[in-house]
Image 1 (cartoon, rainbow, N blue to C red):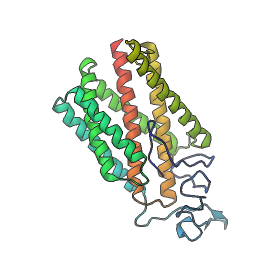
Image 2 (cartoon, one colour):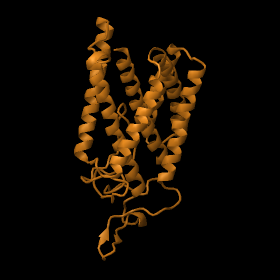
Image 3 (spheres, rainbow, N blue to C red):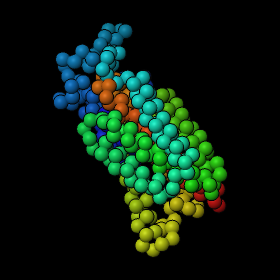
Image 4 (tube, rainbow, N blue to C red):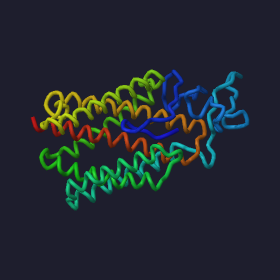
Length: 286
């Protein structure tokens, strides 16, 4: 399992073609990083945690790794995510309270981008890199939130509430198997993310060359539609993050992978928060 978000390369998706829920049985398919691959240490014949077990009627059931030390669990993912998000929130609060200059906030945004890319392309999780990213990202979020909140009072709190609502809604639909995470879903989300980012890049280039608001993707009616699309895209990536966590737990991924899960969830939640913040600013500015 590798952490991911709409900005960085997503690695290691499961493509089992079925419904995805926290109680879904893992399927040993080629696309799953913890099953079906000859080089996968978590799904080898000698691995007692990847062996078929007898079902209630004598039939074999897919392998589910029992609790054991040194492996990824839902508790380890939750604790690492709480640490990472807590650091982001604490750094954002510091930036807000100290009224950090917006220009300095963008410097921290570049630092966060660099650290995030560095971790995204590393083969293993680096808690130091992830925490460094969390601090830099939090400082940026604090400055940009304060600046937008000054011209659109209440925007920051509304964005937080909106982000929490999206997280809870996607988690509920995922657990209830309303959202089906399979190969087709993954390809669609990745293609949509590429298109979204390319449009954003073109909008920035046009704005730099011709001045004004570029293609108008960040204000007015078109900006509202683009903001909603960004939030929906972030919600889809949340579902992919949940699937990756589920697969890592089911196939006995190393405990260190919990940091990558926390990293991916944090990146996605930051994405959703920023899109909410931008959307609310547009709506209040109309």
